[in-house]
Image (cartoon, rainbow, N blue to C red; front, side, top):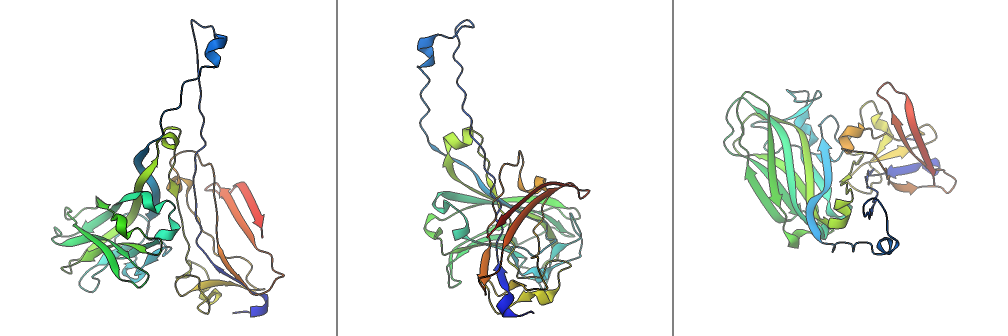
Length: 308
């Protein structure tokens, strides 16, 4: 595991925040000629109001365990995309679970509802499978619980979309948001390609000027990343969960978080923000955060490095 005196302990969540620039144009015209008195009489800005729009979006193709719990239910089963899906049956009452700390979402007081969508395959007509949204306090006690029945056609992959209203009283920064499927009757079916969208109140001015919601991606180091040596993970220290990634003289790079641009943004990519929790054992180490953009062929188009 290396010597502690020359180690850096990295426990992290990489958060991708996508923001839009704002441009306002004024065009004053009178038969093709601008009048000087008109140039100083610009239209008043409309009153800013709050409108309900998407604030955050998260996608999980179940090919990795990042940001997911109960990942033991995931394997190389029948899948909608990739090679893996989550299988529910008599031995798996609960599906893979998405857990979000509300403190990781800015402006949580403005959150109003959560939209869950996923693909489901079943050999039979599902009877009492339930999609669940639960908010738990720091002791794991549920302070808000909503379950909605899943209805799907048998023998084909079907896209399910479910909306949950959020209890304002439950929106405390110390609470956790959990989303999962409850297999009440022990039926056998598969789920894949989960997507969660969180809607809330945003500025009408920002939205009308090109508001783009945040797309966030996390790596919690609870499960070894594919092709990464499990010995590089440590359970001696953790900022969240029980595990972290250990950097030593022989291990210079942490696991990377890689996503297609189409997975995190629907329009122009403007900004990528990274954050990471570090427990540094000595003062002579140099930490460098790196962001790259590459073509599918591997050709590098962009490289940014920030030293700390």
